[in-house]
Image (cartoon, rainbow, N blue to C red; front, side, top):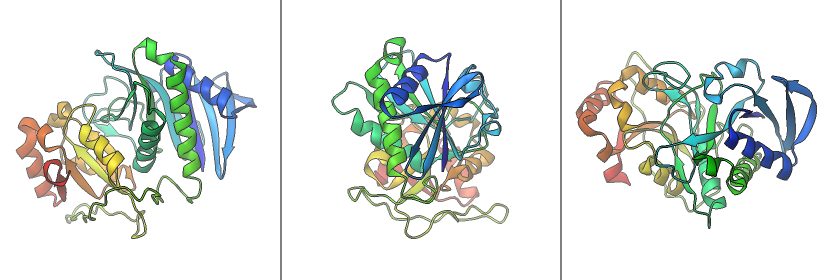
Length: 314
């Protein structure tokens, strides 16, 4: 599989992670360049990885997948927050509402749920003993791409962005995720888990309406991970974190409470379809649905989409 890791010269955290990859994990400079910047290369088992650097901000790099040949794009980035919490995060890009930070309005990217799960688990393991919090974030910001894509980030202030330890944790987690996925023919889709400690959640089939068939051809009975779409909760979703670390479920997109007013029938279906493997059901962060709770329940019922409640199943 071809994997593209994308860095930006305008992002100190991105540069930090890139330098850790080059210096500590055998990324070698190629003769070719991209955007007038050096490209670095590594091969891990059956995966070919190229490390690119672009001159623009990462969140505005729309259609970069049309210029780079890859099956999966991983953006290494800074994370900013007013509370300046020390955190290492991952998430899928896209917008449930306005495109104030790049991408397209009310349009989502393809979320590689299994890779997100594996990276969150690796970050959690490699950050042990540090004071960094690990979290999956709600879906937000650009760029818009048509290939599977995810962000891995250092937060939340310049002090953390340039912290070499944080950069090394992310670099190590990325390399470990790729290495541990190398025995799979396509680790974005074929996702056998090796962690027998994960709590098993009974499979739930998505009911289909006559106008839209939501299926999951990319999964089969031998897969241990099942993808879900999480609705509700905060930007740092505690339910999704628990799901990622303690169950056999893999979270793709998350629509946080602050975006629920924008969530409609089309976006629910898009979030499920644009997850690989396709989301099997919706997981409701029950205490984080606020005044939108009944409207969301009505939308799911109208479209015959199965859901689970976090307060009952977790």
